[in-house]
Length: 221
Image (cartoon, rainbow, N blue to C red; front, side, top):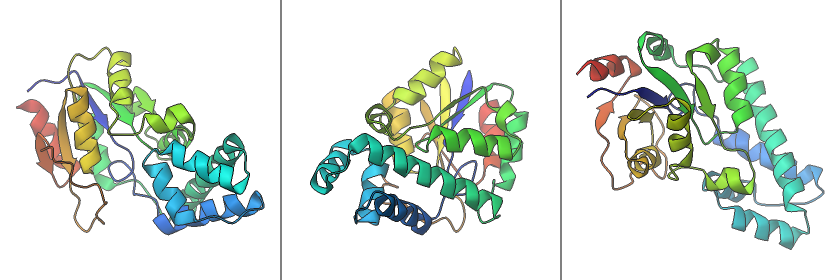
């Protein structure tokens, strides 16, 4: 199958997934800096699910302006992730090197904040490899575009002027998003990877891989 472009998820595919505990701590600091106390782990899950209504309801209960909360949360989450990279506790996967040999347009479509994605791509010398990058800011529109919503995949394809694309992800929600966009998918299942609650979506991926090194042969078939 020939593809005009290959799109990649970011966390768990290009770079190591951030620590959930570190993300919980970042949201705990968000509440503290706003003079409130809130359930950090539950809030993190709501953000990951793109549930802006739940966040807004929580903010109303705690008498916090929702925009102020989301801005502070984004700041804490971004700073935590960048600090983890600089401390060496989170890095890029070795097999990402193979993407440089892929002869079609490449892009990143992630649910992480776009600032994190672009800064980490710069940090690891990968920014020039990907022609377009889409993330999800902590705004109503950004949260609504989280996968399995296909909007960011479709927009990336439009940017790359691609009629066909392959999406590479490590979760069931990635496979579902690709299906919703009407394109093929690769489910990347790395050895010793921690599972996600949404690893099964009821949609079968087009391909299964355990490493990105298995990707180039798929593009030649």
